Length: 135
Image 1 (cartoon, rainbow, N blue to C red):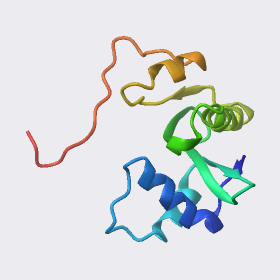
Image 2: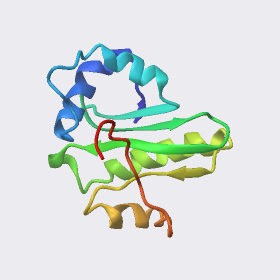
Image 3: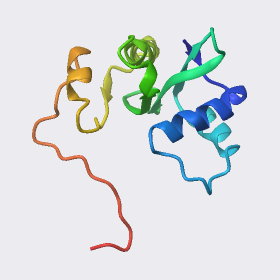
């Protein structure tokens, strides 16, 4: 487990694809700015195959709030603690910087994973996304 950098771009594209979050029209080199602009970006590398098997990142100003984004582990590597290691690495990074308000939007079916790691629903709040031009 380590923080990602520009050398990881191609492996990270594969992880975004596995999460269903990659548009083939995007330029993979744009990930360099995404990595650099993240508060923290962790990547799990399987040393036996020298391949990224999971990733996650944090978006934050480094002072108050932080948001976990893009946490994914390759399907054939799940159930081995990789996601927990990634999330723990990101949370440790946040807390070492003094950022302790950390949130995320969980995909359906992943709530138990996050509750085991002390995340709880934010009662009374609704996650929302901007959709310009739609009413």
